[in-house]
Length: 465
Image (cartoon, rainbow, N blue to C red; front, side, top):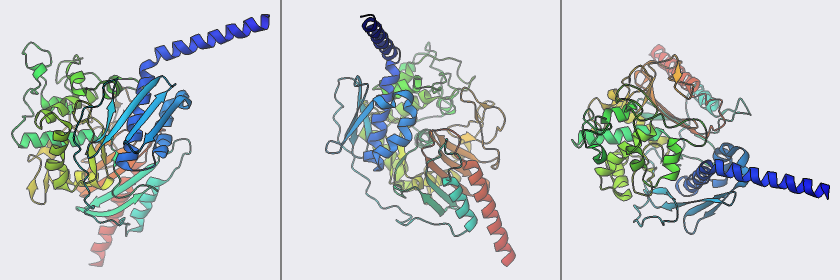
């Protein structure tokens, strides 16, 4: 009987401890379920790659000790993914044609919406993968796909190189190709910067004027002075919102709020506008609201604006920015785009916002994008190479890429997404992957090797003449 009592007591302790764990981590478990649903849904229906592979490479490493408790199912007939954690925390993500996946929160059904239709347009560069003609560039691309540290896998999925406006080299992982949309994460912010630029060119916004947010219209509101420029630069005064760990202001906004812009606009300021830099998904949620206000405040309206004003003129026919349940673009980090499309986007900035003779962005908007904010290595929607000392607050990550030219600037997203723009070299390098396990991607050294190869090639051409 004594043994039985001890066993029962131990069982009670385990059950109580488990209940306490679940209660104390309920938001983290909810975030886990929602993150898996959204990621797996996009893998299956947007990227059209193996969703089990994406879960194993991207989501499982983030789950830590609870990975065993995660269950998901892909319902291809209904275009949805259902996920549960501990069979208690549930999430559903629904694919909508032309709009990507949207997360259903709570018991409310997803809002009814018409689909936008798929962009069944062949890639303008053709269907064949462009292999480099220079063995040195080929070696650089091979280096990008190498796995020097088995404990910190890079899991590179795509590399695309454009030089002098021409696609000169690319390589893809098995299952991926020139038309595969890949989760760009915070590279999306730089695309949002372009969309804001379009509204500025159209005269619908002014960068240096207070952001026209209805909830901020009162002069007594502390948010009232916040400008569009400060939102782009992340010195709006809103808090640093993407910290280490499973739960942050950003993850709560993405995975627990049906109206991300409303959540962001009601967030109190931590600092006076223009005085302090803090990484800001909240700022880009507010900017996404401005895009929605200008395009009808519906998912279809917002995505139509993106397509008609940016994607179609650039030939970005394999890209989509997802929306929240309210129809607002998730312009802080939920764009899916092919690596070629992102190279086209980078080329737009090399060409000062002009494509095929048509001005897309205001004159000088590209230079504005990489003009320094305060004393940081951030610009206005892009990272810069102006600061090579110190590190990004909270993250302890370097500001720039010191082995690359000083005029280089870049879009960067979680898990190793890069659009590197080097004006002095007329070069765009795109790197996409699932580098979840840390250890870096090596993209700085790869890009430096590409530049060195281009210089050798140019020197040889001169010598031959």
